[in-house]
Image 1: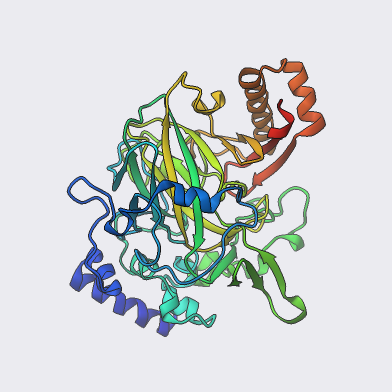
Image 2: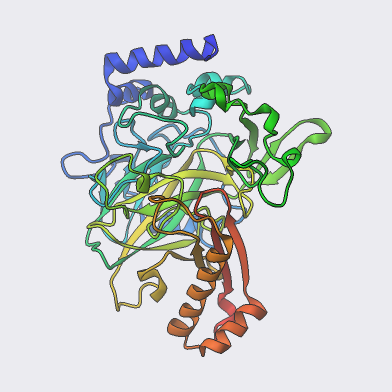
Length: 463
C-alpha cells in the first residue's frame, strides 16, 4: 500500500487537477498564464524570441557529452534562460508516458529546419509506481524540499491520463513531443545537434528492478554465466507476486549533485563521479501504429527511428542523425541522464530531469549533409569521432525481442565499413583492417530489450 504521506500528497494534487484541469494545474503551480507551446500555429516562446542558435552552439562547442553539464539552479518549467527559438514544456496533456509517438501522431510544437528548440524534459525516476507516484513525498524522504521538486513532474505523476498506466508493461519514460520539423519527408535524415543538456534539479536516481538489468533473473532462474546468489536485486527480495509495485522490492539509489559532480552512498561507502549529461532518448516517429500503447510504440527498445538509444557520447556538442519515416520527422526526447557508464548495467543511468536545446536540420538525399549510412540507420558524431551504431533488433518490440550483442556488434561494424568505404573512399578490406587496428567498439547498453553497440572512429585518422 502507498504510505499515508504519499497518499495525502497525491490526493491533494489530483484534487487540484480535477478542479483546474491538467494544463491549468501546471500554470497555477508556476503562477503564470503560459499556454500550449503550439498556439495559433506558432510554437515560439516570447522569452526565447531573441535567443540565437549560435548562443547555444557556442556554449556547447567541444563538450562532446563527456564531463558536460553543470547544475546552477532549479529550472522550473519556462523559468530561467531559454536558449532556443522555440520552447516546449512537458505538459501533462501532451507527453506520452511509456510510449513514443507514431508516424500518425499530432505535433505539439513546430520548428523550421535549421532553427533551435529548447525542451524541458522530465525524468521518470521519482514518479514511477514502485516509488509511490508522488515525487514530492518520494524526494522528501531524501531531504529534498518542495521547491526543489519540479512542478511538471508533480503534475504528470498526479494527473497523467492519456493512456492507462500499467507498470509491468509500459515503458517508464516520460516522452516529450513530437516536434514537427518543416520540410522533413520520408527518405530524408533529421540532423539533431545537442547544444545544451543542463540539469534542472540537483539530484538524480539510479534504479535496479527485479527481472531487469544485466544481472536479472529469468523465468528459468539465473541467467547464463552467474548463479542465483549473484542475481541483482537479490531474488529473495522479489515481491512482484504481490501485484503492488511499491512492494516489489526494487532498489533506487539517490544521488546528490554538486556543481558538475554527483555523490552517492555515505561514509567510507561514498563515491563521487563527474556528471555526463545527455538524453538517453532522442528519436523520430517510426512505428506505423495508430494505437498509442501498441508494443511497437513502447518506449523501452530503440529502433531505426532512434528513441531509447542510450549512447553516452550524445551530450552537448554531439550530432545525431536519424532516417525520417514521417512527414515533419516528428522529433521527441526523453530519458534525461545526468551520468551513465557504457552498458548501463544496473538498468538505469543516473536519471535526472534536463533542459535540452537542439538544432534540428533536414538533410535531403544526395545533399552530402549527412553520412550516407544515416539515410537507413542511426548514426552520430562528436567533435572528435564518428559513431557508427548497431542494434540487435531495430524494428521495435512487436513479435518478440532479440537481445544478442553479437548481432548488434556485427551491424555496428558493417555500418562502419559502409561509412568508411562510401563516404571516405577506403577500400573495404583496408577499412576492415583499420577498424581492427584503431577503432574502438563499446557496448551502449544491455538493458533495453534491444541491445546496442557503438563504434568510435577518430576523425583525425581520416585524411
